[in-house]
Image (tube, rainbow over all chains, first blue to last red; front, top):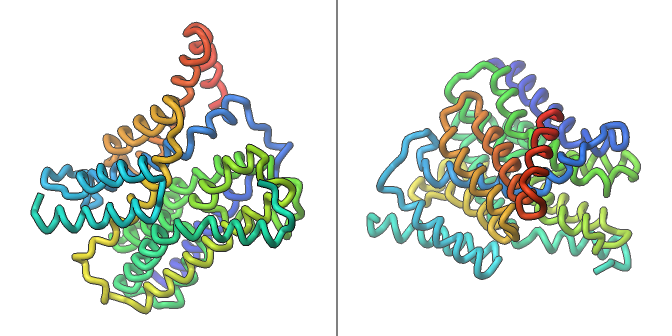
Length: 108
Length: 247
């Protein structure tokens, strides 16, 4: 891809993303949010985060092929338990990564 | 608690973000490393990072660039992944819209999953007081800086991070650490379960539409469970049919 096309792509994606981030903040009052939508917003973080996490754990290669021997699954389950018990981000990451390395090492 | 000054609120916001940075830094490092490995120059990589300011969209764009997808399809995919920002924007708008543009434009540009997750509940409860937007600005600036610096560090680390560290697993882990404590009701559990499940099943949908489909499915599941627990079933059915007209 030429440099021009590359920067054009960056600019278009960047401006589009900025427009979406600004949308309701800028047009508040003119863009009406239906009440169903405003209640729906409560569930956006849980839904989007889970939709980002689960495929990334289940498909370690980034493609849609299920791998039976996948140490990410037990590591993620332990991380969920730690997050549930401690609500501590750093500990969740440390235990999750440590778990992954252990499971990899022992070939689970 | 309400803060006494804008400065205090800002610093508390910065402090609130610090525990999340171990989930952000590896992702940023990885983005920088990946871009350099693909033959991008440091200047181009930082230009992309400044313009996108969105890790997942940037990662996907890098992958698609690598496989030779046309620029327009890359832009569309990146924007689809970032559709969630419209919902974040709508959720933060009641607390930010009254500010002048010299506030709202930079704050909107710096809107991220992390600062949204830290601030959305605190803003709507009103517990932050009159300096709430300073608190949000603190989380957003700290997030922006740690992202830019970690990509920059990744550029200079280049290929020296061994593949065997599996650092990319830190990405889903950091999302898990945000997700799990946020599940406080049967409805949010339903939203997460359905969203995650659809995303796994719809992984092969083109243009990453699986993520959007899953997100919408999860939100509908959350609303349904909320409705079932609060009112008789007949009301729920009319509510959802009304909901469909808005889409």
